[in-house]
Figure 1: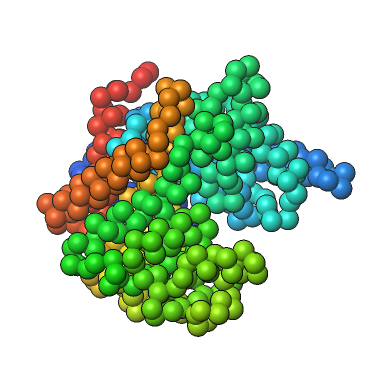
Figure 2: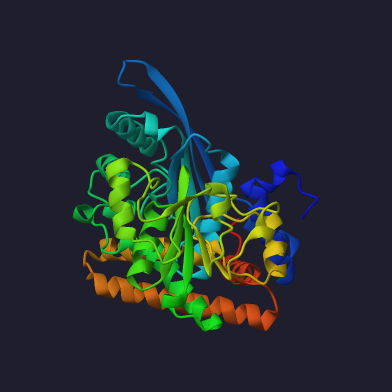
Length: 421
Ligand code: GLU
């Protein structure tokens, strides 16, 4: 992969295409099917006027990309960030297709994004932006069409605004139009914890391959938000030693295991994980390369690259974020014999409980948390085992196996449906 320029390596769409091509090649998919599977079904760009609190008008640009709707409605989050761009949204939408397919839930893949800096916006500005964005993509979303969810910098409150905007437009309360909603509006128990819980569930399966018990497993986590923070809490409660926590503004380390509840309290009080008294500070750019058993990147894309992958000292890489590893790093991880649980499997717990939420909304009948978690476990463990067995059978690495399994299912759906003309 050394032929990729730095810019190319960091383009998530290219990363997605490289993984796609490797799997498509191994599956001997014909050229026409490859074209269908690699091309997004729909891309919408909207320019969103928003009245700011100071009376000025600003125009924000947003996207919604439906990569595939072959296996069911589009499904995927909406992110708000200054560096959102169409190529990134396309890549993320395609990853949703493969993710839903790997865990075999009846959705296609979609993603949305708005270029904005939510940290600089008031609640009122965010609400107006969200409602106007929702109104401008309203013809393309819906319970049977495309079902958004939270992603980077969006949350339950954002979903409540979208649910309300959609419901007002169609003239009836439509809870199933989004997932990741507040409980009071048809949200599901366990949805908030689901991505982190799913990461833990697949890591527990991977540990068996190494004969490791959670008590003897040292974990380094990057990101202390919805995914990383939740994974840290749940893993610590299960007995794992979460020895390192890496954030955008610093990193902390304790070889005996961090007290995650205390670290959360410290962050709530001070706004940062830095200067946590029960840990030593480490350089955040070096923290990913600490000696550990499990590395769980749960923050952003492009963290593990062709330049730094050789420095990793973990046995298992559990990709909690979407796209934390560039395609350029893939062969290095294979050479180093690192057991990779690829993002489209590792972080699929979130969308799996989104599926459960959508099912509950449509039935109007809600499950208790134990049922949600046990069904999640069934999906995550079953999918982990399917990918692991596939990798063994076909002699490929885990990521390629996950992509092959996913592509094959979507290609079969496309074939069975035929091309409507
Ligand atoms: N944003 C999450 C993801 O990337 C969840 C998507 C969903 O629940 O639809 O998987």
